[in-house]
Length: 305
Image 1 (cartoon, rainbow, N blue to C red):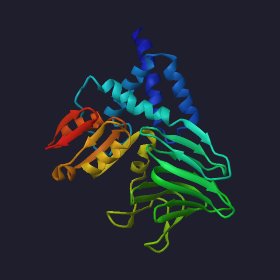
Image 2: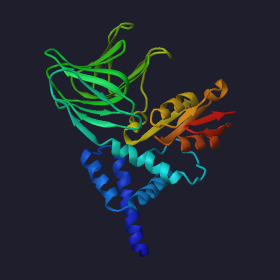
Image 3: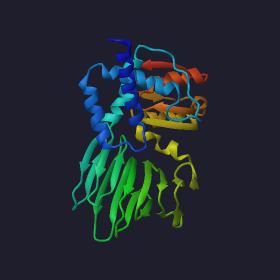
Image 4: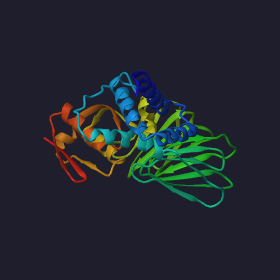
């Protein structure tokens, strides 16, 4: 292949990387990307190379520290598994019918786009379980665990998201809801909602605000919305996060689990943007950045002093 042709192929792969990270990425983009990957077996490698360049120049964020990575033979396969695989599993589109409550679940590394009978759209993250139904008085979604992004269509009935002991109530707008055990978070990306709960009075949540409750207490803050939305493009953004918390979030996307048992190591803090589903690469980055060492055994990656 000529140098000019090779450069054209790289530019084509680079355009796909940018397209899949765009805020207005659509289902049509996902289908076209899948067709492009299947059209030439070499496209996977080209996409991986373009993704590595994207990482090197800070394509996702300019103001978060990006960590150096130690070269490894396995990284070629892992990068594509982390970036492309999530992009592909995120393209499953399901249209729900009205009537009785319907269950939606995703496995580890799987994401789904859901169209509800009222025209609302859900983007369901990995390892998530929820149910939805419409009654005469409300549109009701129960989140058992995991995370979901909601684009709520305007309607005469309130849209209620029930997560544990609290509820988010809105008539329209875009929101993220996350629940793990007793810890939950409601994020108002674009819109206004009411938070109802048994432990607190009703409160108003406006665009740009997050409400959290659980083991760390209850309160509101205004996080960076780009950090909050990174998971929708196959990334996790950490800003001064404890290693224990970061590892737990990364583990949701991979069968190869990060294990951090030493309390001193667990409390170490890390910042950066990382590809989900790529725990080996994440661990190597941590080893470069913090005073830790790794021990890989089967499906466990132990991070210790």
